[in-house]
Image (cartoon, rainbow, N blue to C red; front, side, top):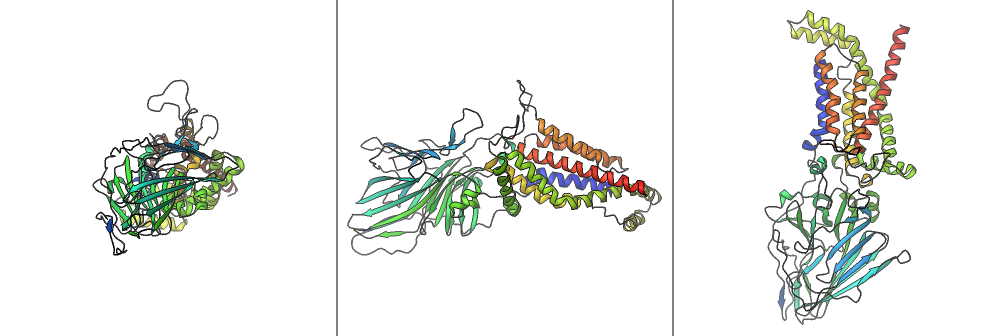
Length: 557
């Protein structure tokens, strides 16, 4: 039974640190919305009779389509946009965004790092926010603008940029961007004007092309989602590249938003007035092409049709996204543990608002959770202490009934009942705290608040592994993982204080756990290591108090 408890503790530990990644990641995805691969909806022209307005299937872009060179009668102008939050560049070539740099977020933690660039593609791969209307309005048409730059200051809340293009066939397209100084959300209105004298039919489509925003060498990278995402019919859909590498994948339903997300950032389009009916994906893990399309529309001769969108290019900051609305906050996905993770994130932000240090916030949240579980842990530790007292009796029973396993088990169970000891009592607190660990693990790994957030001394980025650089590189590590080693030492000391049994096998296994944990934590985010270290210190304090009370009780007896 003692060996069983030891192995149970190890299994639980591995589930927490490794098994979770393999057995839980991905299982918390909602059931997919209705999916189908569709045929191209071609724009049609008639001279006299109206065209049927029933919805039609939406075109799926070809897999990794080449970006064709387009010839214009003049060089497209680049228009610079600057607000308090970002700097962007739009091109008259298709009205696409060729650059979008966040001022308040850096590419890397280096002191000379530039702002975070969310448009990672180049001219050969294409750029986001192209608009088409079936085959009647091509994505690559030449727009014109009267201005070459838009700059918002603190005294100017918003500004507009109007782009106008002759799409041919008697169609004119007017794109109106509205930029706001205090939000990453911008408005895009697209007006299709039909002066052709014929009734036209087409499907409004907004295209994105995205590469991974962040380059990370962290082992956790492969466990973090980056790719197309959409909130459709009340469910978040995060689509892995394996689902569309062999051919386009189409999701259909009521689309609140659709785009491309990573661990910390999101590029999304919010279709207004029901302009989102399908979301099509193609490409691969490094380069994803997506298209948000509406339903088949008809424009009578001499009339126009306007489509409205919101566009969000910015950080996945939960509170900010909630304030924006449109269910954009669902992009911050903690999976099964949302119910614990989001309150934990709220606590972190609350403590940080007072102390302006997320390291201190992590310590306080750890203390708070430890206090909540203190009575349960207390019971478990006392149970382990009582088990230790029974070890001499257990040894005698095993020796007495070594040739009769059935009788031995019966006597052992009677011993537990007599002394009111639960053999699994020591493991129960650990089991109950697993969801809390998962939730905090998710929060500390995924929350943008911890990205590049300093703590103290050598820990200048709580989202990066803990390293103290000493002027030369250590093999494999680079710098010295001081906090991780302290965490391992605290776990070793905790094991020394914990009740031991007469079983040498179990004792050796349990004393080896701190070594395993130390190696596994070497490349974890320092914020997570800090949480575990503080939790160990509190457990040591609790064990010391229990040992002291036990000695007093024994002396009194």
